[in-house]
Image (cartoon, rainbow, N blue to C red; front, side, top):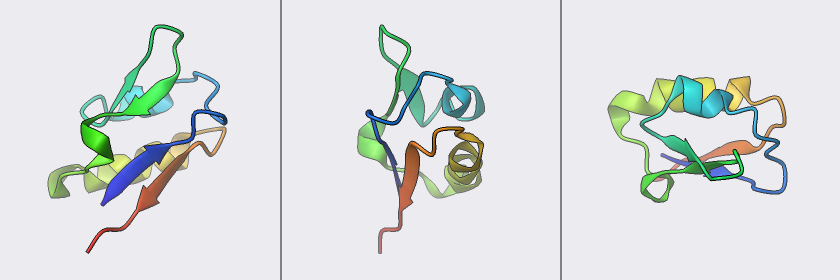
Length: 66
């Protein structure tokens, strides 16, 4: 599983970072980006899903990997 942040949709609410700081960080302007090329370890998959569900701008998506 991977997460992606659409930089054009992100408005800097940073709910993803609050939920999963292991997966997201914020830049100097307060916009989120995925850490580790978006790779999500198995033990953090639920946090990734929670971050997607809590993004008010729908800026985060999950890409399932084989």
